[in-house]
Image 1 (cartoon, one colour):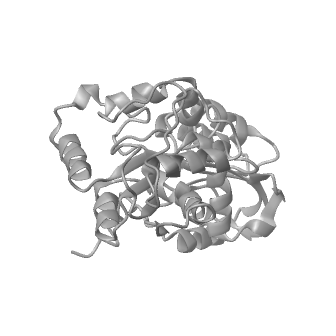
Image 2 (cartoon, helix red, strand yellow; image 1 turned 120 degrees about the horizontal axis):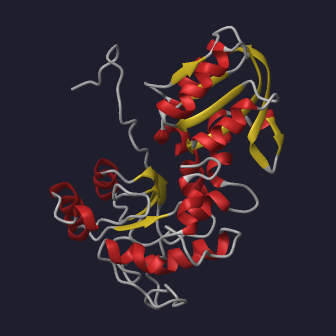
Length: 311
């Protein structure tokens, strides 16, 4: 998730490390305690997290959702999978591949802050937690610091890489603002759909609109940040993962109806940040060599009635 005063920034302002762990029953190290695991040739989850902290390029936030949610710092890591969202499907596929540490960008427990008190007796939550325990799975929520990574936001750069837009960046330090050559909106969106493998991407605006000035807000974008971006005279197309239809989407509709030549592309949250976790797997390989590291895609959650999934 991303955007201006997004849930990412909200999360940095609340939800302590200890609280995040306690909500899902994981051990809670004392403030400032190292997550280093057992000494020896084997690699522990805590050692992986320590290396992530060392290499991410920013100091670790005292309040963050980036926490170990299942397993323990001492759990021995057999393999690592990165993913945009650790759905049960992703967790099961990771286990089948021998990857018992999953670095997930979004929460595996249905609330960004990973608090589960209100659903602690829910059958689905219990099943997922029990599955992770039975298979020695460590789920590491890695959201805030990957967005704030230096020198560049890991999600935004990964999406540019996946879409092949490196040459379209206005500034290498800011992959969210791009310039194109005036390709019609319908063709621009079609190319995006192909590269992302999207089934339910949605587009608003004149199909013949020449696309030149583009700004992205991968993941979720709020009404406040979205209106400011969409209203800018320097923007033709705003691309986001998701937003509220009765707020920002309505504003974009009215702006276009008023006569502004603009467009909105809503990719879907999962596909709008997935490229960032492809990049995360490659990044981890730069300092984790003891075990295999791979990206496991989270499935797009919805399907189009014209193209139903195969049984």
